Length: 405
Image (cartoon, rainbow, N blue to C red; front, side, top):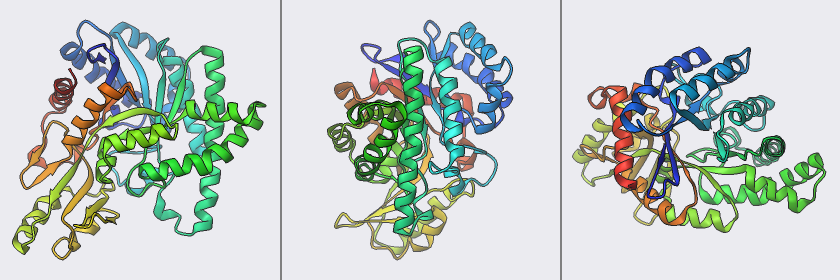
């Protein structure tokens, strides 16, 4: 839905909150939750959807008359789709996901084909006069590519494949007038995980190698190819991810803008944060409080910060906990998307303050218009902080609206 003093933002939540990998499961969830949310939050105005489609669901939606039926339902319910989550390719709930959430990565043709289907779907659903984004994996998973030559090879292949998607998005714009962008989503241990690595990838790989491929594909100049890449390949700024990396929002915005890299979507999410006490007993209490969050479905990367500002990473919370009592770090931040309307978790906190900073920055900076609430961990939250899913989503919206209006 449109929010802000000049209605210049589109706010939604990501449907990856709900389990379901087939189109029928996705559609049932949308019918169950969206009309009820719209009635509470936007009864008089159109209500936006952040749609997550797995690979199988994307194929099913394009089969038969499923897409036209969905379009009819959206029109009847006064709903609209302006962003897709194309990060998880396959199963995302009720199974072990961990590092397989990055597979297939951007070096594989399967990722390209899946994303092209999403682009076709989004072009059909996107209202006229709006741009639309598809968030996606940060190229690949860094621990898979420890050999430097192998990493360079995958960076190169990713650049070519991203250029293929950019070429198709350019064709879609020429045919329909609709601007689509693919939004790379940096996160801890992604092949690109922070602002510096994003900028390096764009400048050292995407623009030169992807640009050359795009120029050849479309028979255009290098300058035109670079311009198209800037339009169609952007960044998804997930507030949880950048908080875990200890990056200041204003600095990241400034660095990306100086490099000519657009922010296509802001995902509003909060990480776990804890200041580590010096005494052993206090550390033990922190460990007891963190342990229920060390669940087996998703990766929960941990980055610790030391007094001198240096950072050290652990691949998952379960592998970090044994080091908690002896580390010299002063703070831990953990990639676990906790409800954004809660700041204090008894001993633990969240990085909610960074979301507030981002929302206020956007009102001055206008770097991005698309806002998506993305707390996808409701099913794996510790029991004591679980509440009804519909009430939870509504509370997240109300919290955002309280900050931005």
